[in-house]
Figure 1: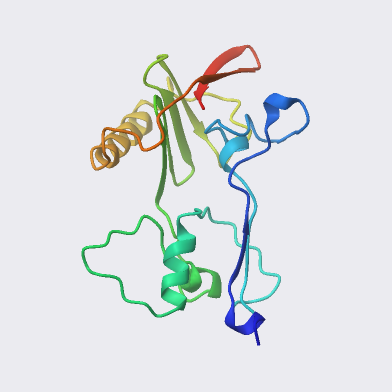
Figure 2: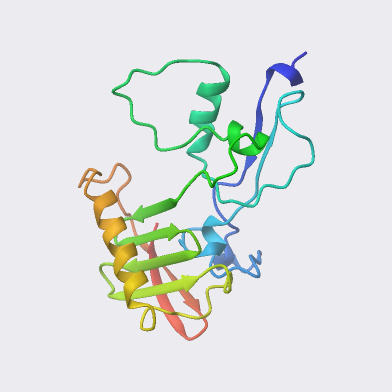
Length: 194
């Protein structure tokens, strides 16, 4: 009865380390350490025999942070009302009980690199190196076409969402930047904290 009593999660913590030359995250841009899709768009699989549908493909983005919330809900544990969870319980979404997306927004922040995904839009920037890109992931999952100069309204909205979320976070990082790793992607050079 272990399979019926155990949720199994399988997830990669990041895309392949493209900087080694040993991996290819295609069709995604970037890889491990970056917040481009090659670094954050990774496999996530769940199994809970007798509780979750088998062989179902779920296409909405989820987060590793959802593992905690899902496990707590499955165990029927009540957390204190003062406990804020970053993830959501995925069970109603995967079972089809809830047909909406689990996350309206997903955020990333690593030192000077900030990113947000909101519906089909993704904004990524370096607060230190003064670059910013806006992508429509529905049409451009490879993040090749920067729309930041064409979609000023979307760019402003995502920047505002990020700033509101970022204001809730501590100023001091629990894992401070040790160094930057240089990535040359196409004709652009990026430095991501490591």
